[in-house]
Length: 313
Figure 1 (tube, rainbow, N blue to C red):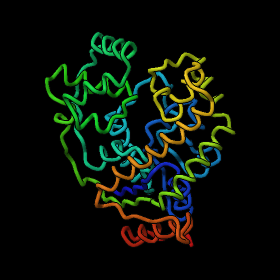
Figure 2: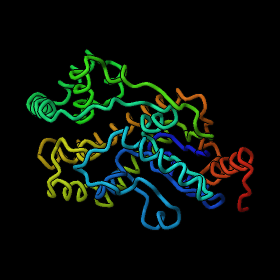
Figure 3: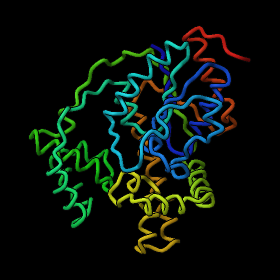
Figure 4: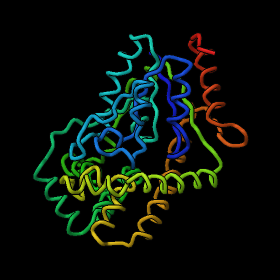
């Protein structure tokens, strides 16, 4: 089964490149962004616009409310259903996004522990997070599962609690219970987009400023007023948690904007580090005279060569 993968750090231009590729070859895009699955989180997740979604079919966008859980195991299950369906339609599934664990789960065939949810334990851990902070739980996780702690943000209480729940119920770290299977089950063509770090950071700062102009604060306010808790999935997302702190009077507006920009730059750096481990990724640098159009053409040529697909133009 064919599978195109386009990855890279936030703000590098993954979606724009994928849309350009779709003008030449028959694609359906599967969003590999852990937050684009949630309704009402449009501006802060740089979700594809309605017009872009009319141009190209997008999957796993706007499928859940922000207070619903959606794990990497849920994502993998959805994608494993979508890939053969899209192939049967004679189209190429394109996994596009920057959530590295989600993409690795598909490409490497991770097995996730099938444990029943322990609501009592979760409640206890949530109360501990509320009273002592999620970073306190993150420190506890680092002691029993340093590998998981390395890849879970200290503010991501939901994932920290899940990893601690697995450890407390099984006596084993989550990472030890994750195996691999079906590796290489897809005929995969993987690309990573990159650019000079200084240029990327400038793009990130401009994007944050544009999001704020587009009503990012209003979006977070609406979610909060609709009942999204501070520890909900939505409010743990990058930018959302910083704006929530501002709404709660914990930081000034100037500090809020500074933190969003800083944390987004740090996130981009972590994304680079994650994807660089995958030696199958072909990297395309988007500066030095090469832009979105050139990157798309390079990907289209590779698709035509690998899968003998005739493309438009």
